[in-house]
Image (tube, rainbow, N blue to C red; front, side):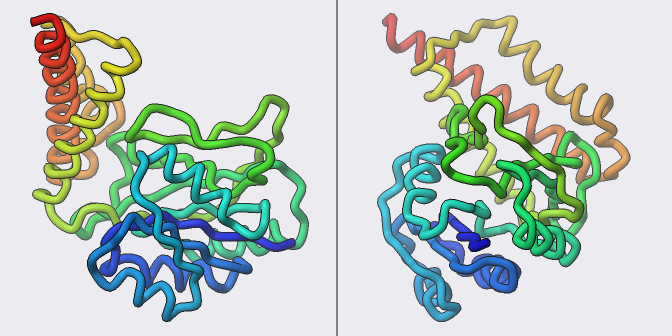
Length: 252
């Protein structure tokens, strides 16, 4: 059984080496689809033997669907550049290679935030379907939040071991990314006909904070649990006010 690892990148010189080295023992090829990086991403990837393809950014979902088609083998391990296979997860994938019994396999993702592993806030267990037969599904969802949708009747299995996600090195990086995602989310919502109003602007961020910090036990992650919950609520607030502004400008 041969597996292709597919990774999308842009200016990932700080992360990509660790990602590729973690998958090399368990896959048969690494394919990197790069959105015209200006740093050392290409040099690092090719130096590690990865197949490097440049393709202008189309959007998260569109880029990933295009990337999967470039793989040599139909069995795909989909990774982000800031993710690493834990030893336990790598061993689980090796067992699958010996006996592929299902159409897709999912596992938990554990996120490292500013040096701390986050076990709550809705961030863990963060189940991810990342190993699958590409003939049985495709990426769907709403940008910037993609998910892999298997066809009806496809069989899935849970694998032991964590996908280690090295997310934000500092809080400012998180704030900037949340601001970007809020903008993309508002544009996607507008395109899909979703609306915003004063009630949603007030309710959605408040509910988001309460859900993440209280219901999903974010307070158990200490200071960073509070920071994550506040920034997530802020991103929700920005999404809904930007969505309302789009409707205001469209009807002006």
